[in-house]
Image (cartoon, rainbow, N blue to C red; front, side, top):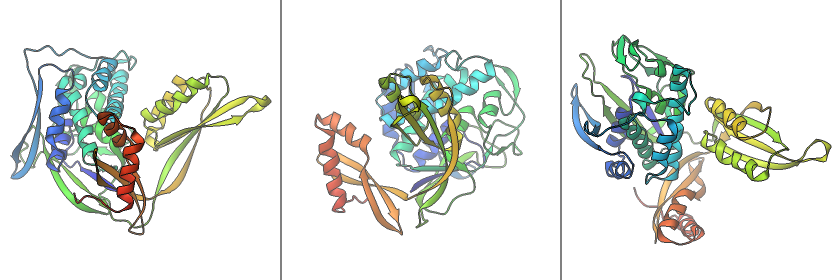
Length: 396
């Protein structure tokens, strides 16, 4: 399984995260093209090599023309900007979910709803770019699992839209709930709301570095220079080396619905997947009094339960949802690529006892290529599968 480890020994921010992923191999040209496709006027991006205490690092910079007005935005405005950009579907979904984390925190700080809150700093153009660029870089690198070290936030005070506030700032403090962190010994803001939201959304756990074979290391530079340490975020990218299936904990949410239009019921799969589910499915059943009904089952990580509960209650007529915690074994996975007439297609490969045990073309890539070339998705999927069965993987 291709794994990203976030080594947040000096905090984390959005630009540090993007810079570290570029430094580790994510193509900057894809990020530039994505930003150019977004309806953000007066915004451009660049990446440059800098030195932080003698450590070579990549500094990602978002330049916003001061003469171009950048309004405060509500979440629906930001979602519209992301959905209309030229981005893979997966990147759009993950970027929107990241902003929903920020929106929930900001709404709680202001005592309002997520739909009505103004995003202030975290809704500024540079933060929109940071979140989209980070999720695009993660996608381009083929990352399947992210693990993070406990976060360092810094201490002292900062000046923000709320006036002078202690570190961590109010929205950051709420985002830090349920994950391990500490202030550290630096009087400065080391963890920003954008950086914490990315780490919280991506990371399956916060722990020491797992057993893995490192393929690349990246350093993302922060804008501040510190007196006694390099202000950088370090990332490790590599393959998990455990030969046996991994054991993980998972939450299962279930509810029975017998009084909804089936067309609306089917939408619950989409809604729960967008809220962060690993899988979601509906089973037709016969309920009490012989009623035709549907059982919605959702699998998710523990930290995503609240988002998914809200999505189910908001989009269904159910009055109650059952939750139980289970463990499951999952095969370690890696991504390989094959060449087809219509471009390179990633193949997900399940590993058992260090051997390729199962293969499956990534459907989203097949579908995007099919739309681009005006042919059936099935044709590209079958061509990619045939190449994978023959072992015609590219050396990348």
